[in-house]
Image (tube, rainbow, N blue to C red; front, top):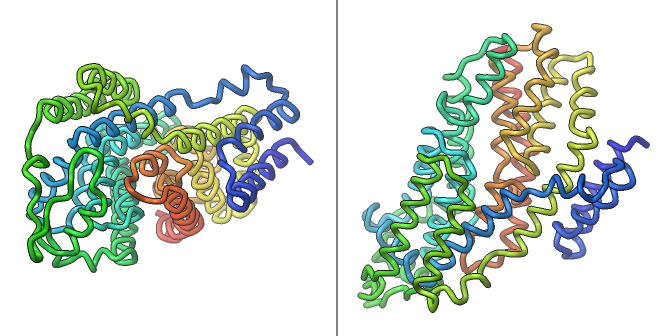
Length: 437
């Protein structure tokens, strides 16, 4: 058995053991990275640790720490009610507002995880307070980020179009953008219907159902308001802007500007702002460190370390080369889409795009498959799966979930991510590759 095939089988065992024995999959992945990296790839400890996602570790810790402080001092409660007033109390519009906001952020140049890191904690706060299913809200945030992710000025779009130009292949930036936009919009609409979004219609801030949802999540920094009959009246303290809340809101704006305008690291910026708030208001921040989602941090960092070992030992390239050698172009195209989806569910989407499209260049150069349709199908397949809890975006949504059973939510994200991974490449292949676009 080849080392590459062995590493893939070990990955499958990780899933089986992690889901049947309730062991943190990240811890299992670290053990697998040590075993496979040492025995099959000949890596020493430094080689294994080279794959540890230090940047993502800081993003997860920094963002969850910052928003734990924001929750403790009541800022997230204030934002929830401000957002509800913005949509005039119509609960059903909230998921679509979050979808649109993340889409706009990525379309104008934000890195997808940065946009999700900013929006997800606020969106999941809305979901907890007003009885919106966390999977619905979290998935719409991620799909919104990917809907705008391939605009001509976005990170993803610039990467793909740059690779095509460098390789001398024809491309269509507009077609690529529209393919991602409509694919994610269609998935979001199906989710909205399937997960009870239509039942939110007609509910607003004054409905008894929304009030009950508010009372159920409370939060550390505020109350859900008081109910009079079927109307809810937010407590005066909840709507009051205290100095700590003003400083936290300024910090949130600073985080957005630092990440989107100044191109600073989201994790380092968030943890710096959190530390500043903790120094000035230590009482509000005392318990915040305990609310950093450490099990999620272990899970994601462990899995990505193992995937980095697979990349280092050539498993990804090995799979791509074997697919490219298949003599049936349409079948090879479908397999490329599936490789992009499966690998991206555990790794950086932009990294996978940057690796797979060059690997597919000889295959595309044969002229038997439409380049525009194939590139669009491969690109969208590699990003639409970012709802997986093992991807950066899915991990951020999982970490931001409030007042919910995280183990249950993790399983929901994993099942949904698996369903998207299994079906999206096939649908995209049928829609974009088979017609010869």
